[in-house]
Length: 359
Image (cartoon, rainbow, N blue to C red):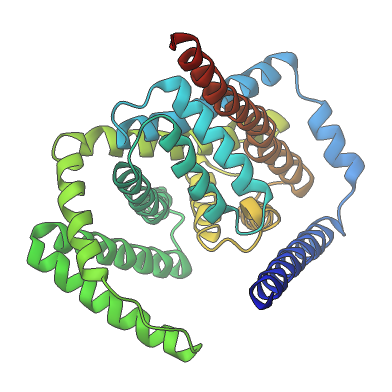
């Protein structure tokens, strides 16, 4: 009886926390949009959107569709044997969850395990795929801002703030690469990295009165051995697919800006890349589901500061987010429902065939 009461209390507490997260996220998103749009004419924004020609709308549809497809390429490289159709199904379904649910990234990872597991992938293979794709994604998020700022500097638009930001970006990228390289160098080094990381994490957890972590050195050694096997022949396809995925997302933003009237003379393509890159960095910490509100704030503020007309910039950013946040949610819901239908009917069909085969 006591255990049931405890479980009931835990469930209510969990639901209350989830409800609180949803309310806080919604309030934050509303406040961000109110601040961004309070001094702008929405009629001008709508006029910029409706002024796009059919040719421009078709070009947007093409780049948005290509962007969706590139998500699958990354997973096909980190999970050898995963077919394109299943990769699309999984990436779209997990993206829909990540974009709409508080703590959606964690739930999305859980869905990744469930979907890959239903297709015969072991937990160890899935773990390596999740970790490698996450590491390469982090590398891209650190590298693209550095590249963008270097390109802006080459065009003669460097400032002290940009140079400083580039310096921090290069430092962070080098540190991440060095740590990753050291961990892969040998089993002993991987074990040392796990021990140090475990000690640091345990001390941080002690500050919030949580128990220490254990076994990280074993986990890092296993990760090292399996990752080396994957990367030995697959590092280039993984890197190429990751870069293509990030740059495809940037291409959608660039086409949106040009189609609503923000010219290269107002905001150059390198400046657009720099603002895009820092917007991607801003989503490294999931403040809101899918970065809703946060991405818009960074993009609108940065692109307007770079010289874009605010009404046109807002129009472009809203179209961009509709294509890269809203569209994946719609497609992802369909993919999730399709997968659920398949997993529910498969056991029934299997049981039916087994029963029919009995004498």
